[in-house]
Length: 493
Image 1: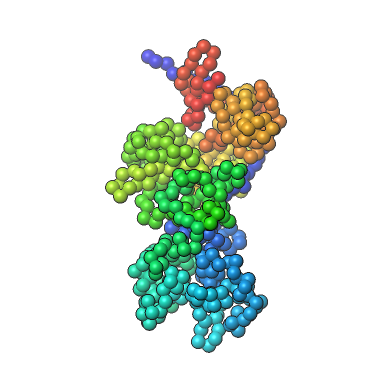
Image 2: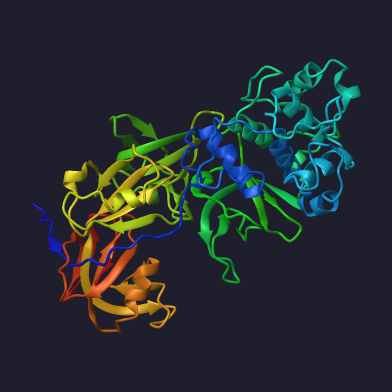
């Protein structure tokens, strides 16, 4: 009978810390379609939120606020200052915050909004569905003569025909919510104008089709952080950073005249399924409910920002991980997005059973905890566990993996360590761990503490704490061996 050798390697822990990069920008937006619409528009500059980390999707928008969004969607913000030093409407005087936006909207070439018969604009009145549709249709190049003279029915019917109102239904005189407004603007970006071009192509430098967004924390060739890694290349963002909510999606990458990313627009017809794994194999996965999902071994898979096959990636994906499978028109798996591509907020548990640190990084109260790949509760947590919050899937991934080993090498060098090598394997460092590593040199015996996705969260002197990692000896020769750890990482030495 073949014997399987087990070996234990050693590790340690680090001081409490939290990483600042967030996956989601608005904690109160949970509906998947609204998340997608809001994030497209936030990156494009059309949406700012309410300044408190929330979007308030069920709130209403005033006429002035909607007008500002429309001007921003036109990419005309730089012209606003030219329109704010005179008064057109008695209730939108020069000291009103929206004067420049309102005046531009009624005097510019597009002239997409007007006042009321009594000469007022009513800037603080909630905008109605009919008014909103009229504004967006005019941005698309339509006028009264194109839709008929019955208002707002003519504009609403024409909007339905061209797809502008997909996913949004309301009465013409009813006020719309902020979530509905976001969906309408997102629809408009990919709706054809009267002349037949997608609206987004008329207000950007170029639009790249069939692009998959892989990471929002990539580094460009000139060192710019938080650039977008895509299947087409790496792109610096033009203005607003991208969140992780759109990672894995295939769609349109919108660039400005300098080749920087203005926004990313997912394919709204994509069919996808998010699966939390109980187990993974070369040709399938089994989810937490025991349901088997077929994924052919050759299916293109994007894992931690790199392209591979499902057969190759499945050996590294841990129990409790979430993958998104995108399906083609035939119903078979087209490609798989297997996570990575963004930084997660990370903390260290300070005492057994404590949620104190975790509660400082989560953005909702209904998150799920996975410890070493299995569902867990607070009483399962131990002091020195590393907890990372996955905002995209609203779960906390906890790892207790610690390794003690000899410090072999650092990249790019020991004075600027971004990666370190132990046991013949190079690992990424989180920012706090980078500072920790500066205290050590080649040949020192160190203990490192890992996140659930295999990054080093801290580097400490081995005399402070021992490791606990276990693994299976994959191969051995003389005095060296290769060991596969329980989290799928292989080390050798």
